[in-house]
Length: 175
Image 1 (cartoon, rainbow, N blue to C red):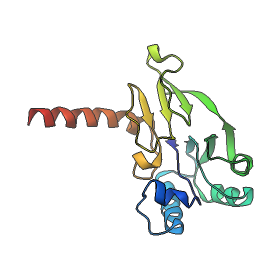
Image 2: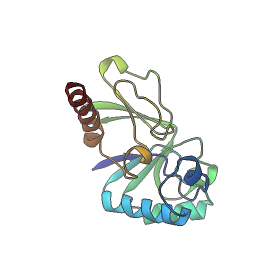
Image 3: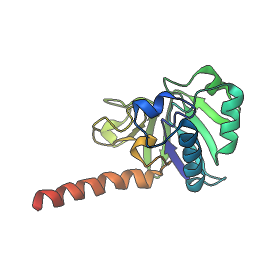
């Protein structure tokens, strides 16, 4: 299985204040996100993390990566320091990736795009950075933990979410 996530901000004390995440401490935040990740992702799964993974030394980040299930790829975000990028445990690191999955071309970047490669051919933009605050355009999805109950998600779940939201909005208009 392939999963997507972003903006975990492990060991970043700013995250509780800036994003008002519902945790009493940074230690609780990190423990919870690790537990949720490992409940969701199996050891043989693949995870594309779309940036802003963690703060700390390379040794700390390497230890954190070892505690998380799956083969992990990093799409570098604006808060990913050299220690995070150079930590052992990443299957790959890059700023941008185009990935074919389930008949779709996925455009992976930490930042949301206004337009992207093959947008006219129904490619899909997956991003982080906006912490669920950006109104998406068609075929654009924020995969950050703030948008997905702090858990990595599959492409199937991502694509189904927009359909469920549209159906709820239609029902609300009728009522």
